[in-house]
Amino acid sequence: MSVEVKAPMPGKILEVLVKVGDQVKEDDEVLMLEAMKMENPIYAPAGGAVKEIKVKANDNVETEQVLMIIG
Image (cartoon, rainbow, N blue to C red; front, side, top):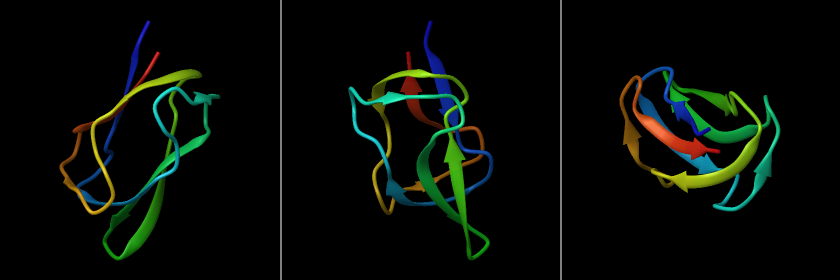
């Protein structure tokens, strides 16, 4: 079963901390999002392998935009 990692708020991707194929555990940091001049870590909602990364550093994202798929 795949799980989508979504942006909790609009902002800019500062850093992608994982790559496709990496194994992550629930609550691992996977991305760093800048919003309102603050760095906000984005955590994996579930464990599994990173299947797809839909953003890169410096991308602007909107609330609820899918950033990554973990499965």
